[in-house]
Every structure is written in C-alpha cells, then in structure tokens.
Amino acid sequence: MACSGLPVQIAAARRYDRRPDPAAIAGALRRGDTVFMPQVHQVLPRVARLMVALRALVLGPFREEYSFLFLVQGRGREGMGLHHDGPVDGFWLQLAGRRTVTTGPRVAPGTPADLDTTPAGRGWAAVDLTPGTLFYLPPWTPHRVVCRARSLALSLTWSPPRPPRATGATAEQIVRARARSLAAWDVAEGRVPAPPRRRRDRLWTQVPAVAGAADGRGGVRLWTCDGVLDVPREARPLVRRLAAMPALPRATVRARPGLAPLLAHGVLGDQDLPLRVVPADPGALDGWRFA
Image 1 (spheres, rainbow, N blue to C red):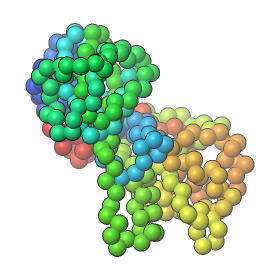
Image 2 (image 1 turned 30 degrees about the horizontal axis):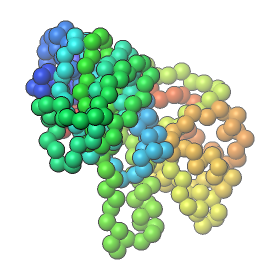
Image 3 (image 1 turned 120 degrees about the horizontal axis):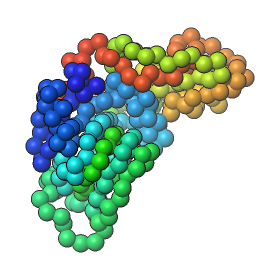
Image 4 (image 1 turned 90 degrees about the vertical axis):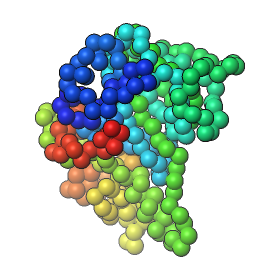
C-alpha cells in the first residue's frame, strides 16, 4: 500500500520526507525510520468503522478526525522525538509487533509541539504496547515512541468539538447537524480487490446510521451519509444501536419487522466491510493535505 501511490511520509530525527518514492520508502524501512500513511481510514473501511464507533460511543459529534498508519522495522530509532499533539484526543491501536511509549504529565496549552529536553518532574512512565492494545493519549500529553522490532500501529485522533453556532438555528436544525456529524463516512470510492464472502447468519452495518426523533407517523427517522430514511416504530430498539456500526445475528433482524428499508438502502448487508479499497482517484484523498 505504501508504494502504491497513496499519501505517505517518512519521519527520522524530526525530518520529514513528505512525498517519498518507492525506493525511499524501502530504504527507510531498512534503516528503521518511521513510515506513516495519513488519513488511511479513507482506504481501509474497517479502520473507518472503528473511528465511527469511538465517535458514537465515546467522543461525540463536531470533531475533526485524523488517522495515521505507522509502519516501522524497528532499530531503536525515534522518528519524531519527544513531542505532544496539542489539544487532540488520541487512541492508538497496536496491530502487530510492539513499541515502547514514554509519556509525561500534561504540558500547558501553547507549549511548542517539539520538546528538546524532557521536562523535569514526576509522572513519567514507559509502557510496551503489544498486539491488540488500545491506548488512550489525552490532550497536551508529551510522549516519545521507540520501536526495537517490527511494529504496525494505528493512531486515531480527534480535535476538540466545534459545534456550529446556534445563533438563529432551530432545535430541528441543531438535531440535523448533530446527526450528520455522527453519520459521516469518509471512505473513498473505488475498487474492492478481495470482496468478503457473503454470510447467511450475519448482517453488518455498512454505513453509520443515527436514529433521530419519531417521524409524524410514530416511526423513526434514521440519518445516514446518503440521506434520511424513515423506519417503522417497531425497529426503534435496533436502529438506535446502528450508530456504532455493529454486526448483528441475522435472526435478530428477522425478528424485527419493518427493517426491509435498511436492507434495500444498503444500511445493512450480508458481507463484512472490505479490508481495503483501491481508490478511483488517489489524488483526491485527504492524506495529501499532510504532505
């Protein structure tokens, strides 16, 4: 993926190669430099689903979202040095291998991102992130990362919430804005090289779907990235769970009348999300904004 023309960067000793060619990427991995792909959720739908779940269950709406996939053949080198990421909430998922993260006490807002020396005081700790670890990094937390062996990891970050100004907005407009924010689905259009197999016993949520207030007939208004659906009131207990994009036993859905619109509109489907999308237009990906 890193050599396929997607956005990618190399970090070593706080220097960045923001548009490396395949030869530079291969050399960076041999040296133990940090190779990372920004906004990788746009081509990895299951990463986008994890971000949707964190958004729906933990963080809430009206935040800018960022994802980074880090690839390191560890040689004990620091790619970015001691730094902090500012006012963002960070969730790190270690996919393979391990890395050592050292964190310290929160710094004051406005502190320069790169820290030349370790601030004095207590509260510093080092932890090894092993495969499957989900690690939370609070805002303004100084940290450094060292990989001594192979490491593949995700960093998912969210800005502070920035709700739209409510001046002159009706309650309905505010509800719509919140639903649209929670139902955002930032996956690129393109080709799926290996579609998952269909299953008879299971259904997967294909896009975020956020249940709103009852409609005029007592049903439920459901917001998705493609628009609004109205589903019968009997479906209310189930559709309220769809914001986090769960997988559901098919028997559960069969027992709920009136969910045909969810299948017809592709909110639910009998295939898991693909592992990867080959984008139709790589140049349109948001990751290039980081170059």
